[in-house]
Image 1: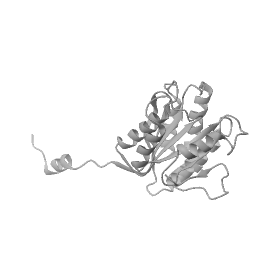
Image 2: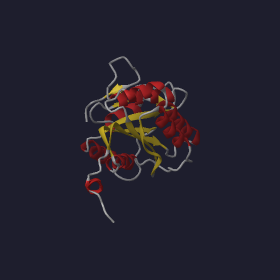
Image 3: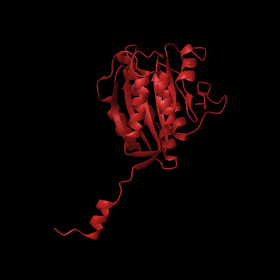
Amino acid sequence: MRISLLSLFLLAAPVHATEVDLELVLLADASGSIDQSEIDLQRQGYAAAITHPDVLYAISSTLTGSIAVTYVEWAANQVVVADWAIITTPEDAQAFADRLLEPPRLASGRNAIGAALLAGKRLIEENDITGLRRVIDFSGDSANNWSGPSIEEARADVLAAGITINALPLMRSPADGWDSPLVQIYEDRIIGGPGAFLVPADTGARFTEAVRRKLILEIAGSQPEAGAIPTVAPNSAP
């Protein structure tokens, strides 16, 4: 069989990773304190947010016009609900949203936050995507860590890899605000890296709005202006 020089060149040429503006791992709480209605709320909230025109506009305004995103539910174990997808068009976003809503609940058990953060790091490092920025977005309704690596150890490993950690602390009541201990714990122990911030969200109707706001900030690679978005706290310190 005769092989052309072009074929030999193509076989020998290095495979280049897909380049996007942002690699984003969405780590959603599925531990024992989260019931099925809250699993559904989180998935539906992210599905609605990723397909929202404001989020799509933020994606199109990035340097590459694209992001990569995966959705993972975490508890004692960590399970990929929707694998890595490159979002460039509304159709891409809708396909990701559809995949997000399909699987049954797979993660369960008590909290293993350190293991969840390290799982997010592995997903970023082992894919074939090159992101100009790399972010893990962690959501949860507590800061307990019952098994696996400590939060401090895992967080340090993630930040050392150049990955930013943002957070979405889940408030049990709309009345909970910045005086909530969970918000302070997440600010002190979870988020970190350049431009890190958190967006508290209650588990009610305003959840989707908070998710959309957070995604726009992450995609834009910016922090909120002081006072512009009162439910967002920036923290650029590691």
